[in-house]
Image (cartoon, rainbow, N blue to C red; front, side, top):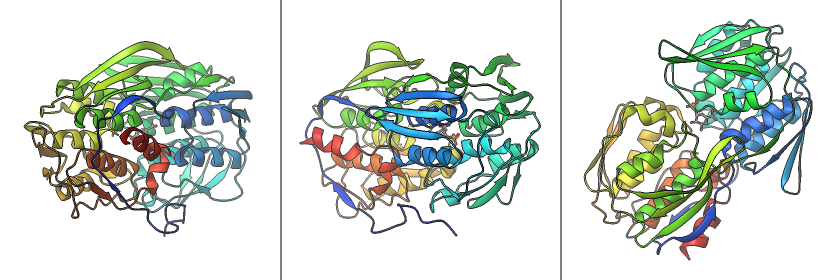
Length: 445
Ligand code: S3P
């Protein structure tokens, strides 16, 4: 049984995304989703006032804010700034109602980490998509620290343990969410909690916790990254400027590459090396993507991306690149479907447990729009059109399966199609990028 959230209520919102003229000008994408979640969580654990600008105001991040309020933090928006009054590590309060995580895996898994070492019990509920996603990957290590769970999928109840037991955990899957859940549990755990990361994943938790004053350090042991955190931590409030989300910029970058005549500048895009893999792969395919005005924002490398329409060539994507672009495969598949030649991807089993099974969803959506796609167990093989638009048309009805990135990827496919692409439900876009359609419509006019 899944809990009703805005996604489950009311009618689906279908839309046909029509072929577009050149995309030109300058745009800005919203704040980074991963950094926004963490700004709220760490602010809620610091004693004093944390101020955040550029916070992503999507449904996922708002689910995190609501849960933290339910556990005692004060989180308010004043003009363009978010102000968070934290309770201090160890002082989260017992929530009085189930925590509604909506569609957000990041909120769920990271908050489960926080609750694990607090003397509180919390029930987590979510929408139909989230209720299908595996939580065993966090309940297993957090149980070893002493927390108790009554299941491995939502809805589930977690009972934290204080004091919890510090331990060393080797990640069995390349997941920043699992890494972060264990480290966040370690914040209120006396002693050293360690995570061994055989394959590096996004490192926002490490960067930001250090910025908040936690005693966290990273070692290299036998070629593996080991992150160690000494608890109990005392976090100091921070002033944070959230850079633009590279995962949101990705849709516009590919749109500009595939729509003839386009030249688009996307300002203020976060280019943390653990996140920027897509732009490198697109360059390898022949995409013109220039980084202008490289600078630092909020401790993260940032640049403005100048993207020009380019003929793309299919490639074999190096599996080692996957963690650095894990959310960008749906939009890469769209680019590949219009490239010259074959694009092969592999080792992408993780895509089957995202907001939807993204391999199956994109194979079906692109095939319905006229692309030539072969679905394999761990990746897609795509035979591109050689620069011709996708057919699109009446048979192209994309099933989004409550997955924002499927909806936005196929919207971009529609811009570069002959007859437009139907998306069955645009509502999930609001989880990560509420202004997506307005921005797109503004450019495509
Ligand atoms: C995220 C980690 C990734 C990513 C998600 C955000 C994070 O998930 O897909 O959108 O903020 O830590 P996994 O840890 O499941 O790979």
